[in-house]
Length: 486
Image 1: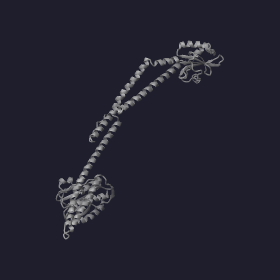
Image 2: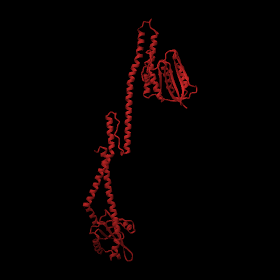
Image 3: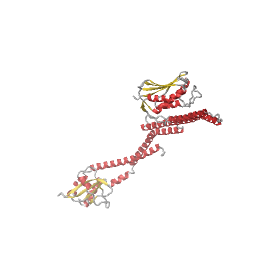
Image 4: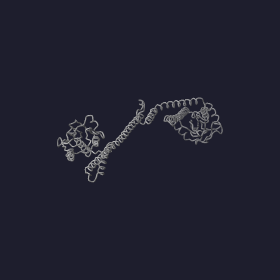
């Protein structure tokens, strides 16, 4: 039990309460004794003075040991706890009421006596000649001759040796035993109450520990925890909420890890599939060229092999780019620039590719004063190139591809529209998937199926979405918007 939090708290609580109970008991005894001493000294403050005034010798300043012995004996019959001492002006003990050889001090300190006579607050403790190890309250009076000469002091210990012996006997008295029993009972009650309170406090922690073990044993799949009660301490509720948040974060990371692993497997599958076609073609063209007679070796084979090698290089580059995009390792650096200039440059760069296919590629801005946009120039260039390249591949000869810019609320709209074959409606939701091959694609096209997937990821970096509309036999349009700088 001492290894559990409940057991440790109970032990600590019991020890602290025991120390506190003992401390309070001693404090109670001290204050009781202090109060009792003050009361006794206050009640007997005039005792020594009355004895001096009533005694014929002392009242005249005569300190006679023999006569005082008899007088002290008579006074002790009235007050058994009193002890009488006649002191010289310097505190030397001249006579006393105690048995012979029982007085251990020959001289008493006068400082408490002077404090007493000067009227200091009670209780005032002076030396006890019979018991030097303890001080006691007293009553004192000066002894003067008729001429006013100080002859000494009458020093009366209130609560002498007899009282000390009686107090010692009280230790084994039934009253003391009863008091001790009450204290022990209170202590046991406090420990029992503390056990219940500590259990109530620790119970939510035990439940949280149990939930965490279940969470781990279930392979981090179950993040449902027992709801704490309203009376649970706010610190414990905060701890529960923190643990729940941590569990949810762990679950999210596990899902991301599983998703990443799944994507890795899919990537390997797609890579092996996408690389197989150009590699097979490349290998076939080269083998054909090698086995052909020197007179029949055609440059067309080498050109086809080169085209497949270029396709293979493009595919590898796209695969690496897509892998970086999916793992968030691509940096995003937005800046303000004129999108019309970028669109015009890209259109001019791809004009030759369009002319080779006898396709009319045009750039159509809504106006020359379109606002500046905020985007990553390099990534936006990649987006436009991919969209235009995709349009050129799916547009037949004598067709048209238009890159248009237009004002769209507080943004700038971008669209790439072609007059190709169009996309069937049931395929529109899948065209941005990796390695998706549209049913309208020609088998002779060198299409690796990653261009549109990369476009979607790059636009996600810009916090915008791409929209597509298509009609079979008429063409397709891809559009998105970019935030303007103003």
